[in-house]
Length: 258
Length: 255
Image (cartoon, rainbow over all chains, first blue to last red; front, side, top):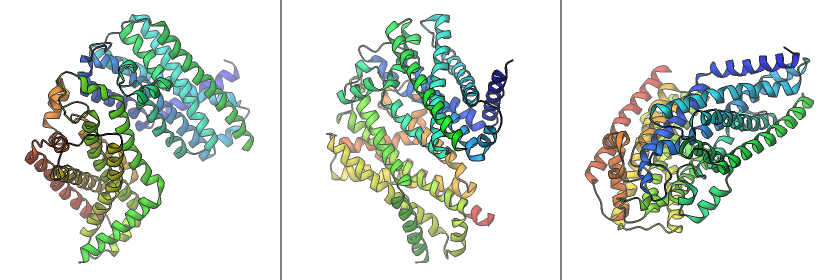
């Protein structure tokens, strides 16, 4: 193993182990999205009787939400852990070693992506257990996991950027309500074409989270929808590229400070 | 008199903290407004579901839920303040200084009520500004807001009991999560008659369902299940007052 890969592996392992050792960081991203799924799929089941609703199963429709909500938790976890590294001086000590900055970022995000995959497996298993069947089949499951990795990477990098810029776990945590607003002002609970209130439909249409949700949703309830997949993967890739660039820049600045 | 003096002091301090600290007041104001926007705006089409029969429309239907939610979370957020007071050591000094400690709980309850009142005024004004229909008379609206006041008191007493037992901010999720569950296991999005499966079974036995249905009835001017709703709300408040005062005794015993 090259030195760089070794550094990334060690830091990724540290990130995963640290997350596992804090039960709240493991339970919250698994439990809360499932709770919201249970509440919404029970309470909004009647919505499937609306003319034009794309499926007769609201659980299948709503199963996309945990995938994106879980990514928000990934943002918080990645950012909070990195902020703690800054606050405790771990990053400063690390900067005295020959470790490359990019290895730190890659290691941190490796841990986030690993947790993202675990979360996606749990969400999908729960969905299958309650009777949801993916219209896109087995290949769709693979694409879904690929998308989960991409989204976790993008949002994780965003959390890392926030942590590196602010150096404060509280500041990173304060981003959560903002992300929550993006989630709720999207097509999370109803397809965009069925949103009656014009301004809300416009906001949901302009909101990138709608397209992330619709990408996952298309694999579950439609099958292979090229437009939804292209928009979802395109936006997720754009978020990942921009976030990684910002996080790399912030890391360079932070390392220069320390 | 001693009880009232303590209550006044605790309430004034709590309210001063809340209203002079935007990070404490703004979230408790913004969250209900945000939920109202997301639910009433985003899900208005739900009123077209066959069997949805709430005459005042979906905005009014969701307003009632968000009003009760804001009342409950006004109590819970005040509970966070109690936990913070214990964590910082202020509550311990308060226990030493107060000639009548029951006034401490009363003071926090008064603060929770006034804090929620500010949110309720803004929420109501916005709902009316966006065209919410109100079918109820003045008496009906007194019934609606009275139910919300009792829910606020019950939530505060629940959160106070937790805060006084655990005396740490880390108890926040324990205060918040059960309230969140009780609220969302009621008929949030559609009337009870349209719920199906397990959520219907849970909603039927959820005491908040009676409160929510009666409150929606008040707003529409066709009160239903009023006695059951007030009975359920008052029973919750009474049970949680025992819980809170026993928590106070535990905090006293802990020193």
